[in-house]
Length: 244
Figure (cartoon, rainbow, N blue to C red):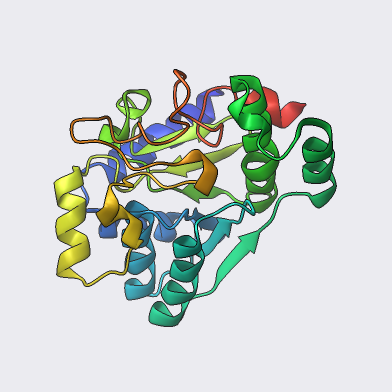
């Protein structure tokens, strides 16, 4: 990271840390009046941020990734969110030729066979479309919270994504799960009904299960693995993947 980028990042962190989540979104828009985008997976955190954007009429582009294997409840929530808040949500799909090549070579559910196969599937269905969605963006807003997993407990309110040469803003990073639930309830924000059935972290249908009491919040993602439970969207290996 260059000295200039490092200073810019620290200035943003200093400006955002004392603010509320809604104020953080306002502030980042005041600093960057274009090129600000938000990636939503329709999770509870993302639904809260979508509400904040719509409520404040902020010029932030919202997009989501359709892997082709999402839960029906997730698809229904996309439509419900657009109808409720009257904001467009742009949908990005994986490259059809790459999906066909993978499935024809390895089968429909090759991700169960190895971590490498699962990461390949995640890259084709999620990371590559995300890279396209972020082309030209200056600021990438996410719904990450520090207590979602051990991999995220050192994440700050702002980070530099060297692979994509942009700044990532995490307005909910210091929120607890209880704070999130209270915010959703207080503002009548629609969320995926699967959350009430034990699906705390929801991804693709064949890769997600409900968690048991006492399990880690991400235990239901890639539940057959003993990996770091990340798909590469926010992982440390993104730079290598983007260059390949």
